[in-house]
Figure 1 (tube, helix red, strand yellow):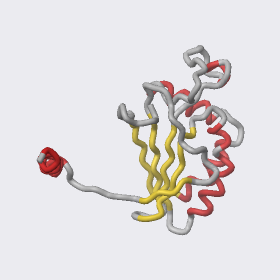
Figure 2: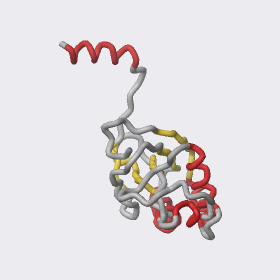
Figure 3: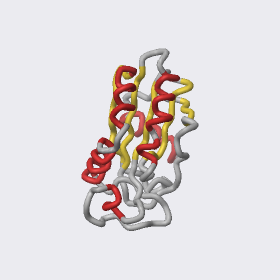
Length: 165
């Protein structure tokens, strides 16, 4: 009965629902548990039909710029549902030497046994700006932008049960 009451209450709040079956890009790191509290950014791209291979080839080169500090949490593409949709999940890791190793100043990041994600929106902005200062990152972005029809960015806060804290 409790479940039926829950379903009835949920149906009042749920306006629509969309499902996708996603596969992970082979060149992306596998998502690993992270200590928190953190926030994550989910960037979703709807690509022009026929461009997935070109997107994957460009990102196979580009991802190295973002994996150095473990901010690349996961990269996925749709297999069932709306096609030509890509999702990138971003966080931020902590290199030896703290934030100084990224040229960001300060020492607000201490080495931990598991990678961390963005502490807050300021941390996200600093990490993204650091990526643009890396030689070669802008070139990879330049080649992927024409492949995009639409893009969306969402900031996500993990639930207590999530392994990505």
